[in-house]
Length: 573
Image (tube, rainbow, N blue to C red; front, top):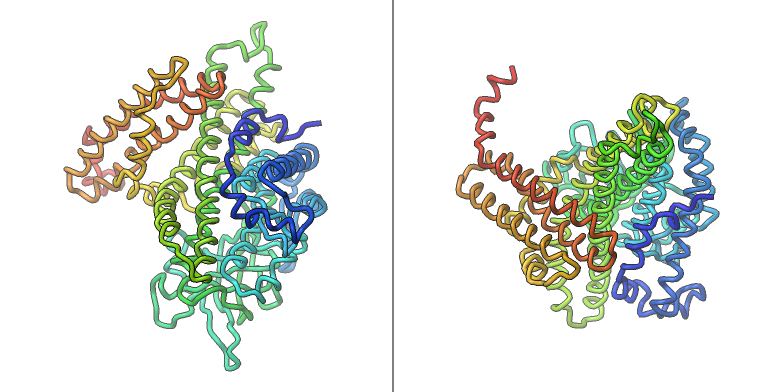
């Protein structure tokens, strides 16, 4: 019977490399939680054993239950009848299995029935489950709604909302998007007002809301009358009662198990979460770090499933007296898929640990402030980590989701005509992958989000330190290639800056971000190659290919190709 954790050697490699000591020390209150909860770990080694067992449980449920239901969930989809949304039968069974296994509140505190799992492990869970069914992760991952309430809500709000997320009785929805406020969330118009009794109420529309039929909504709302930008927005929580009307669910290309709803709030009673005016500039931004990680994990899981299907088919399908696996052109595609898959995993878990420690230090900082203790050192460190997270989370989402679309595309190609048929899983995987580089910020918006950090060379000190190392096992040659890519990046960056043309810089941003990502990812896999011999092949192919691509990126920037934008209106008529 398949276990989607234990059968994934690369994922286990990363788990064994995780250094979560500082993260777990903060999360477990220096392991003082053992005094309150007898099932809490007593030390780091105990914690890691527990986390590995958790992932084995997730792998078992994913491989032996969720995966087998995925095709049926895709075919049936969510139902919408008389204003009521019903999950596909398989989705309902998945939710029951997750609740029985006490996985519904993985990231939530033990005092509210959760498992108190670090974000890094949560992302591994999302990857494993997405390999089984990409659509189910959209529902499972919305326990982040309760986590936002844990971070910013009152004690009463935490006690009110969080426990039923932990038991699986409640699911949630993050109601951000509106018909005229998609990527531009500061254009949000949904109104929040207080009635004569001081009760907050919500009135307006939301669209493209994942799991909009969930029991609890976090709603980005305009609380400041007359305001027009993000400073007038607040975050409110409400139950999905009779005043919340699901007007329709979308008929989508993929992820059919996850209902995407259009909602109408009709004077819905709600509660303010945190402070007024902080809804977008703090709480939504905070959620965005997790959202980018979550979608990248989802995309990676889908990619893993597509790769497994392609490899299996290639080894079974015979043509011209041999399996197509033996055809060099096919084997080369599989190698490319494998490199994209493993480098994507390297980025995911590097960034997940970054966001993990960032969030833990934010909590520690608040405690120090409340206790009147010194916090300058942690505050300075937190600023640096936040800058890195602002750069790397959008780069992560951009790379892994774009690669997922390519991996699933190539998986169909290896299957040939059969891959186009619904009898084979790969056509579903390609449809499911397609949304990942669109929602939670399109690839173009990830470029916009990361270009500032790239221009400011946020990772310069890291790159300097890694470039100065001597790499063993014949890997120094790859370090030289990364140094060459870095030179290409600086030449390209100077060219763009010297142009002093904002339009040119906006269009060249994609090439600059990709150049920077080659260096960042290259050093990740180079360090892995020192630890595991097999990784030398991944590092070699990735870095050699990146050097060739870097030259293309530079040529694209310097070729004056973008000057045709000046005549775009003439061309695009």
